[in-house]
Image 1 (cartoon, rainbow, N blue to C red):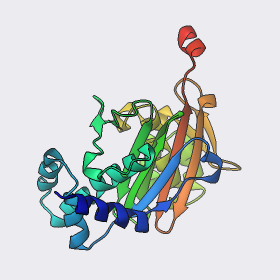
Image 2: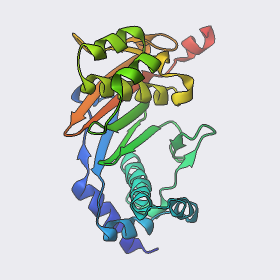
Image 3: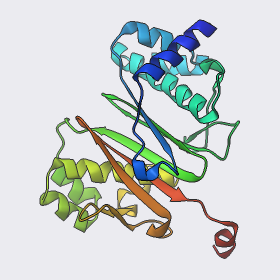
Length: 243
């Protein structure tokens, strides 16, 4: 591991990453996307900034493509951490810890919320020092039994909205729900129906644990992908006392 590799990886992400922060959310969060590279040199350089534990996890993947993507994913996480810290330290020194439920956080800034997601096209990272947040990105080109999944896991109104629209609506709902679950520190086992959304006439949080008023939701769509950001206002001392 060398400082030169950290600098190289930093420069690569700086040149290729894009700001995907929805304009209405800029006061609450930062969202960054980076594409997957199929260049073996990029994966090798990314590996140089990872910990021994991360490298061991990478080797558990049987396919070389999956190993390379994991290395890029973890290097991207460190890149986002450096951006959030405003740090010029080598990426190898930007070390994330994880909560009991697997939520990544930086010990240097425990009050900053981070969320990450990936698909075959790239990696999505987000952070906020003022809100709890979640992001999700999905490959919209993959074959999916959207109607069947919607009827099984979504609210009735959402399933009907998908039947009246198309697969794009399904992925919008799916990413919104995954991002929302992450914003409260939960995953899919908590239940996709814990949140309900409306897409039209405007995007709206209809139902959410603790009430929808504390949540804001944003759809992010690019070529071949659907993504979402959900932010949650943190409870004030008065709210916690009443709760």
